[in-house]
Image 1: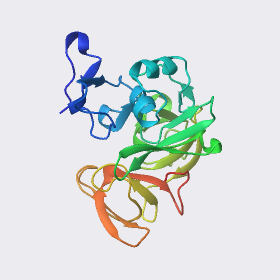
Image 2 (image 1 turned 180 degrees about the horizontal axis):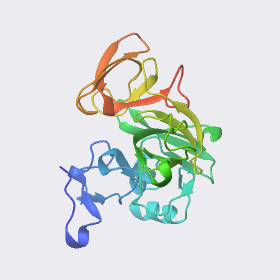
Image 3 (image 1 turned 180 degrees about the vertical axis):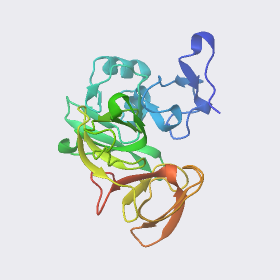
Image 4 (image 1 turned 60 degrees about the vertical axis):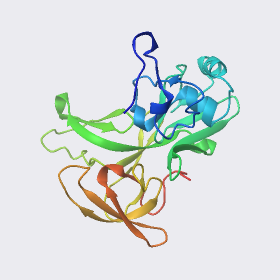
Length: 251
């Protein structure tokens, strides 16, 4: 259970109650910055201040981190973010233009969520998962993605939407910040996927079977890793990353 400070301290939460993967000292101080509402929930994101200070090591204190963040030196998905509370999460791209450094937040077997350095040419690309779809005015299709984005797919004939080839749990390779779709990867048997939560977090394997249940948390997916070992996880923990190989650098 996450315990948030009350009244005047509502901007913080207790360190002991912070998500387990935040690399912070739990008992030296009482409070830690609480992420603002944004593209990722608190249990699957890291506040930009913690990322800058405790993960990337660009500051020694919160004051230093807040100052360099406010100067717009850290870009998330191609947009400068000046709020130290901004939540950074799965597949987000962190760029530091001054040093030409670029990182991607990926699932990690021990650290749950961790940045890896990526080449400059990949800094304008991002993998996103389709969480659900809605039909909007005019019969167009809106894709709702895992990081809070929405992409509108315009259809020429709402009665026979030939453009609607996307399904929930499929992945998209998009340009950021433009959100232009570069490639579409279906969630299907044979697809390459990574586990983003649970005890198998960070494991990569090919989808070899799906046992449907009531909802994503009860639908089981069987994957086979690169060494031929099979394991199971729930559908909501599976993120498709490519067909024959990952579309982007993820480890």
